[in-house]
Length: 234
Image (cartoon, rainbow, N blue to C red):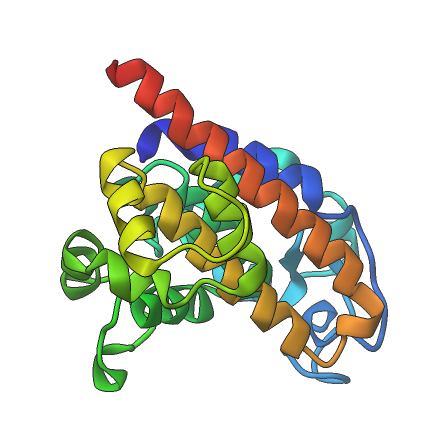
C-alpha cells in the first residue's frame, strides 16, 4: 500500500551498504559484466550498471560515491516499488516483495508470488499485471499453504496460536479464515520461497547469514505493517 512506501524505503536503505567497488562484482561495472565499462562501484544497493542505464551514460566512481539517500529513494521507488505495483499489494506483502525485489530482482520476486498463487507456468512471467493481482485475491488458502516450508509453517502455526506439532490442513485453513490471516499467510509463504532462493545462490556461503538475518527482519516488519493497518481499520 502507498502508506507503507516511506517505511519500506527506510527499511531497505538501512540494510543496504554504503559505497563499495569490488572488481569481482559485476554490478560495480557500468557495463553490467566483469571488466565491461568503467569500474564505478555500488552505493545503497544501486549498481553502476543501473544508474548508468537510468542516466543514459556511464557514471563515474565519483558520481557513485556522491549518491545521496534522496537518489536511493527516487530509484528504489521508480525501479522497484512502482514496477512491483506495491501500491496495490496488501500491507506487509508490499514490503516482502519490495525488499526482496530490490535485493534479488523484481522478476524473481514476482515469479515467486505467481507460483505460490497457483498461476500456470505460462502465466508466471515475472510481471505484476492484472492477472497476478486478480490471483492474489482469488487464490485458495490451501494452494498458498502448500508453499510453506517446515520452518515457516511452524512459525505461522505459532503466530495463529495453534498447538505446536502436526496440525491438520483443515484446522489450519479454518484458523486462517477465523483470524482473517490470509495476508499473513502470504507473508510466510513468500518468506519460505525467499529463503530457498537465497540458499540456492552461489554466494550463499559468503553472504547467506546476512541475507537470512535480513529476511527475518523483513518478516517481522511485514507483520508490523499488516498489524498497523488492521489497527487503523478497527
